[in-house]
Image 1 (cartoon, rainbow, N blue to C red):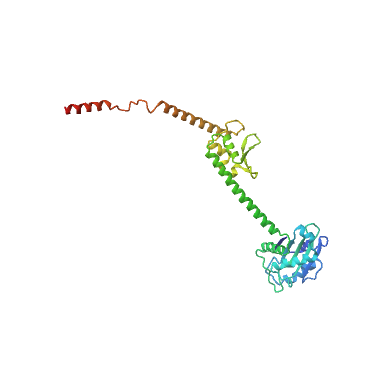
Image 2: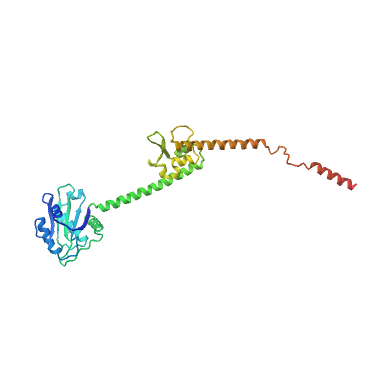
Length: 316
């Protein structure tokens, strides 16, 4: 059930649209005798003229039950729902001027209510935040009568969306932790990294653009079969950042864009230079054996022998 409401100037066009026997039937009225739209307008204007300050002297409302509920509800039940809706809005259903007209020309039946905003003392019905009040009024009437509430449907959808968002946040955190675990194993190539992630139940699915280049990856959690972009999990898992971290494609399994290929070649060159430096260090270590003679080491053996001879000579 949905409730809509607004204050307006009113006029013949509105009354003529609402009160139309070809569209439906009159459901309820109070303190009105007129039969035609123009008669009803003039009847309300008698009281509206008591207030010369206001511009919007009419309240236009729509009370719309859910399609399934609308088909089942009787005329008497719809009349009761209309009264309950007005009471929820703190409208005096005994003294106010209003007419309720049920439109049945469509499957989704709904009730139009035209209410004189000015009372017999010339006072105006307050219309501040009246739209929100109508939504909650319809929600309370639906709950009371065990009908479907549009407000509740929206609340449930928000809760569901929040739940999905929270589950997604937890999943992204878990996948990123697996990424950190894989990087802790210090893979040198993208192939090794992807293999490490697959061992942890995360599959990387290539995203190929129209030019046939590898644009990035989607990741799939194999346990839940949930998919998302790798960069959505964490920016460090985006293809560009993975290549910038030092990983590179060992085999030409994918065509890379110019920027990606430049990062890939840079990583390959860096690894090549590191291996050359490491090899030189190993060779230098082997050549400089710690037991080999060093010209920087002074041999004090001869001096020690001379000192011993001098001591022996003095004793004699």
